[in-house]
Amino acid sequence: MKSQLFQLAAVALLAAGALATSTTTNEDASSSAPSRPTSGNSGECQCPADVLDLQSWKVTLPTGGDDAEEIKQPELATFAADPWFVATENCDGIRFRSAVNGATTGNSAYPRSELREMVSDGSDEAGWSTTEGTHTLTAKLAFTATPNDKPHVVGAQVHGGDDDVTVFRLEGTELWITDGDEPHHHLITDNYQLGTVFEAKFVASDGKIEAYYNGELQTTVESDASEAYFKTGAYTQANCEKSDPCDESNYGEVVLYELNVEHRE
Image (cartoon, rainbow, N blue to C red; front, side, top):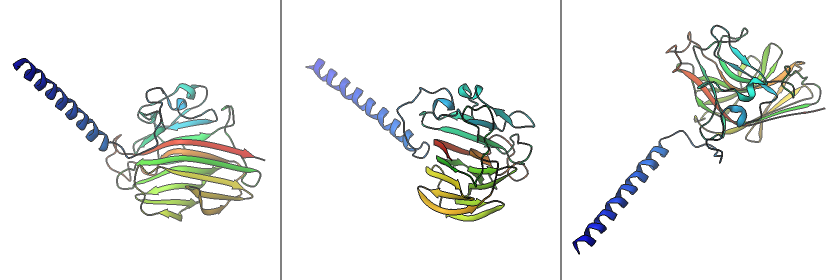
């Protein structure tokens, strides 16, 4: 009889331990990053190109000393740079991070971890006209971090020649669509929460660029750019002069979950 009681007590103790372990795991999960799309590919990706097709893109990174670093195909097909350009832990997206003390390109004072559109085989930079054909970028993304003091980050843009034409720009909790040098052309929402996934879409044709948010047309920007191209990632709109601390802990970040470009004559 004593033996049976001892066995029952042991079973009860084991069950209680399992329950405690399960409860701890659930609490850890509830305090993790904001909800995002899930994928069954956990642990199967080694680099961003394992998650999304990057054949017709190059990436600019805030690394490389004084000048930003560029990675093109075919190297990009197997490239990752932790923490600036990596696949997410669940293999459901690409994380772009750009710290305020990062290296910049020659025409900007701000650092970026950002894709730039290339031709279909990745051999040369893309350049098309907003007045000829129809050119569409569709990107599902989330802003996940902003720098201190000036919490501004660009997540997707149409660039033309030497300057951007229109972009999706987060300023704190305000999500804007810009028009050239006018950063506050159209307010999408003044209550954006970090980690919120949304679909950004640009459609360029007939000298106009339509900007959509979650499938709804937000605004139309006039443009006659002849060497336009798409960009997406984390283009942090702050640097060490405008944000503190001046180190890698202070950054803008975007996670990209889906990316598609279409060009029609």
